[in-house]
Image 1 (cartoon, rainbow, N blue to C red):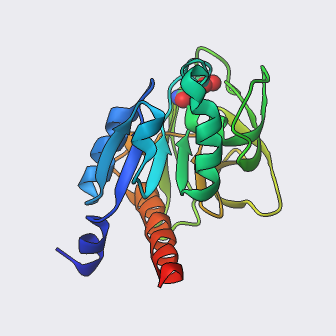
Image 2: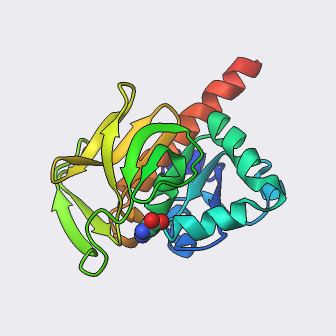
Length: 207
Ligand code: GLN
């Protein structure tokens, strides 16, 4: 085990498991040495180092989040804890959601258009250039949204047809595709690196 992997065994990452493709994230995290933990109720957010909000159906997730004040709790949570939203999870993180408009956590300065590639023939696998080290990145799109615009503080790490498909701003990461369905672990690794840096800077601040 490398020194890097040893450090990662100490990261506990929540995976929001209200609906959608959470299981593949659990496997991807475990494969990288992190400890995944399913989150179904607000209490389960406690003690996590980071959170993944998976793909699925953002409208359905929102319905579950409206219960027990989960939406408000999550809205505060993602302000302070590294969070990665994939597909529907990215829609939840966005500042603005279009087509149709819906409520969102308003945590990440992006405008997202839902189901932007049509309804039937909108699932596809593309390989495209990325700013991540290690060459082109496979991206699995399933009824994918499109990030129409990003704020000045948002870094674009990969694109699809000129539109951002992987973005980062501070402790937040969002992908319009499903990295948990590819064998390439670079996107999850990037998230874990971000979580680890955040954790280390927090514990340094406490010293
Ligand atoms: N179309 C879904 C939505 O709008 C997102 C699809 C996905 O997460 N794969 O919520």
